[in-house]
Image (cartoon, rainbow, N blue to C red; front, side):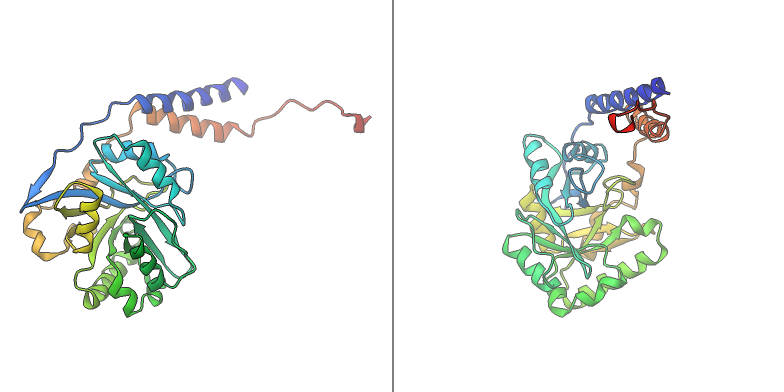
Length: 299
């Protein structure tokens, strides 16, 4: 039994090493349409050293494999994992790491992007948005399901910069796509420039970029991305492959290719080894141990 556990551990360690040495694809070439740089961004990703499966630097590698130009690391009620990820990848060509957090209370979840310090989750939604803006950040309503709607009064809706219109849950929860659509339309009735946001909310299952935002920016930078969201220059695909967001930008999008779904590469040998090693350790971890010898108290 012990030899099998050693084998599982070796698979795990070896798989991590293979993945670390795995060649990365070249950074995506800038896409320019209508005088804008079109950037693929996932605004809601969680990392290890918190509530996600992958360490910040591995998230960046995974985002590059998925063809993303930028990701926002948004752990619950903390910003330091995102700041660590930005620092560790500060010399990388792509993707851009946006510092953020998911401001998490029982009444609402708001992703704060472009902030350096955590926002007090005990605020009302409108006050949390004001605190985000005070740091120069943008506020996005995260997975705005029915239970969160009471927190967004007209003041909060007017101040929101974006709302998640496409979220990974739309592919396995039938009600969420409709609820997100209703919330987005209600927000737009109060705030016509609120941005449509696509986000994976990646923790463990799935992958970054399964839902993404196409941002029409004036420059390829964190500043350019935030400015574009504030102006509402974003487009997303819903679960049916329909464009949502700023209608003026629809003609600048290619025909629906659902590239975010087709971009999912099959796992490499390192990834397979990691999962086999983890599975082996889980299944074999409860194996029989050598009996403990008698202690002084047993005598």
